[in-house]
Length: 443
Ligand code: PLP
Image: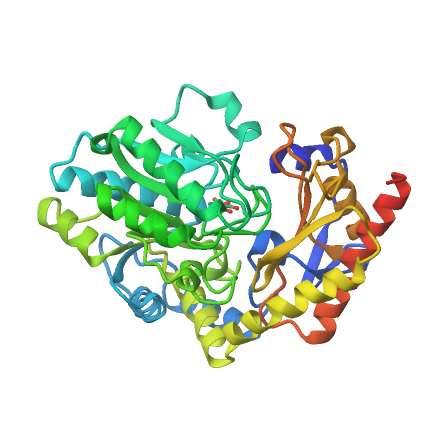
């Protein structure tokens, strides 16, 4: 079941009235702790006075200086902040209104670049099953999520889907240790089979989010992908909409693998949910080729570089840097995993606890040895979400896939600035909610 279906299946959602820091309250006065930052968005929690003040100040000046008439301080400031964070040659960017638009822009930048360098036959994309990438047609076309794409098959840009890169569920013939090499070899074989001259780019999530459950790139995988893409003139696109902007520790998730992509998307944590904001970022090499031929990215929208959204992004990023929150996110990774494992040590259904930084999940399986998921009809993840809401916890469930390619998953993505006590409350309520559902299902 997709997120949308899950929403419509939820008869009566509580009405949220206000939020402060890591907590939200509904119209009945019930309090919830935000264990997943919504869908891994609220990196500074809610109603941060400094972010709100920055947005109000910007609105007092001008809400949006239309990008094709004006530049603005907010846009220029955010551009410089991102350049500092990305380092290397990832220096050129366009600001958009969210993750799907950021991914669309990445795909278009890849095609525009290939055209600019005389490689117009490179029109196909390669991506992986169990990837999200977004909900617009282009992004959905490279998304590996059959439940979401089935209704639109036949209407997508040409793309090739490979197996998920997941050390917990390695591809046939591989082990957790060799999963990275095996998936990289699968990519190289696909490029050769379809002809490198037909492939524009490979797009992947460095830490797979909603489609797979906080799945980090297997050991050596990202570095081998980088080598293969360079070898065959295929652009490497890192979709960091969910895992980027510090969610997994470093500002760029791929930093941890020591890899620079050619193009990357970011969104959710960029403005922390205070304004809709995303970005597509590319290297100077990609930009120089596009500029030489076309003079500009062909990705403009009415709200490109929205000023108040950029002001929110500046405020969010400045607070994260000033308070050293990324070091805290990195340090909390091991603690969160340990605490979750301890809190659920007696539950046989916990097959895996994984992830990076403040992006951690538990995967539930019917059998630990075979990793067999529970039957999809049980809808365990949705039941866990309902139990969590009753217990005053927001978490992010991913339903067990009907084709059995993953178990039911519960994602935690707490704000970067939540206290140790709040983290403990999130872990305790997660364990309690999972335990309650397993008991009521007699599992
Ligand atoms: N890419 C990834 C990896 C995502 O997780 C998402 C959304 O969850 C998107 C793209 C699409 O972002 P949005 O929902 O802001 O359009």
